[in-house]
Amino acid sequence: MNVYENVRMAWEGLKANKMRALLTMLGIIIGIASVIGILTIGDGVSNTVAGAMGSLGASNISVNLQRRSSDIPGNRRIFVTEDDRITEEMIAALVERYSEAIAGIATSRNVGGGQVRDGRDYANVGVTGINDGFLEVNAVEMLRGRTFNERDLDRGRNVAIVSDRLVNNMFDGDMDVAIGQEIAAYVGAAIYPFVIIGVFEHEMTVFNFTSAAERDISTPLYIPITTAQRILNAPDGYTTLTVAAVNTVDSTAFADQIANFLNRYYTNNEYFFIQTMSMESMLESLNTMLATISIGLSVIAGISLLVGGIGVMNIMLVSVTERTREIGTRKALGATNGNIRVQFVVESMIVCLVGGMIGIFLGSVMGYIGTSIIAVAILPTTQSIAISVGFSLGIGLFFGYYPANKAAKLDPIEALRYE
Image (cartoon, rainbow, N blue to C red; front, top):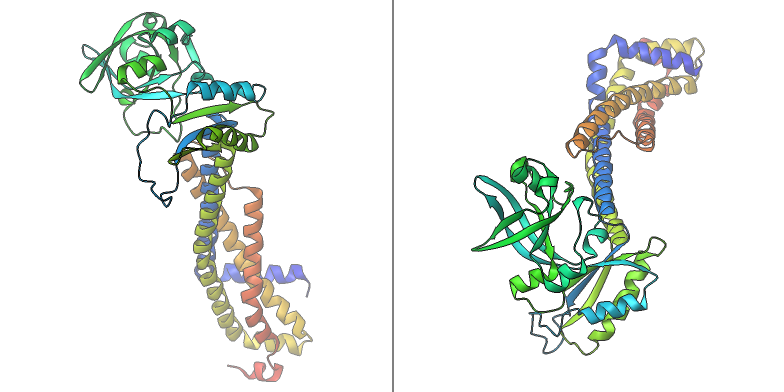
């Protein structure tokens, strides 16, 4: 009997016992659907995070003031003094040393969250002081007006760049009207007046996602960093900044060079040092972590495949018992042990393959719905589908071989006498 005939007989057997076949496949269906769904959602999350981090600047490098290990004898100070901060002189020296590798440097100072109000109109904002390179380094798109110039920064003017969402709330979406208007920002118990000089586009990402109503979404309100320092009466210098590397530069290697350069200023500082991390290395670490989580969840979901395989073996053993006389008749007519073995192995594999295909379909639907929730609806990859199909056939072969071998070894005379 050829393979085609075995497949046809297996299929006829499935159609003759639909309910039993469905119950046999159930473990395979659940296991494959769970694995496909988890892998698809994992890919969707990875793509979303990669896209969001890429929009922040794939070549950006985070530079942070970091406290030294607490096990250093006598290291008890935890607060940052003005002497510990990254100064403008350090930044200037860094730019001069690596002028061909640096595309820009962004610094910022958080003033606080609050509201811009005018009568019954309001907009929630986070007031942030920024330097002249912040918008470019962070890929902020200007829609109207201008960015801060040297005079704004030198004099610490009360000017602001606001989001399009603030303009929607306060000026009915008319950006031309908004430019030049004075607004009042209420931050804590203080009120700060600012003149709008520009409008930027606020984009929602996984990092600023919120379930708040459209009108209540808080957006940044950018002011000159010198203005922020004056408002806060803050000391000079920074504890963190972002360096944008030129696209042709290896940002991971360049991050180490920046750390080595700036740490020369901290040789005698027993409390703090400079630590850098590139966006590229952060993305690699995050993708590795997400992949590990997906694999771990898939392994857990795959336990149901083991249960399903045991179920297939159990049903195939029952089938061998029910068809003992049929096996005896076939052997009496000349069928070899190999013919009998192949017949039952093929039948087991067909059961698992059909269950696997149903599981792939259900898993694809689950994955598509899951990824739709995070706005990046995707389907499972060809690789994951191929692996699932192969795994289904493998389960059929592994768990079907024992019943098939038992059927092949039946004595034809005893089989024909079986009632």
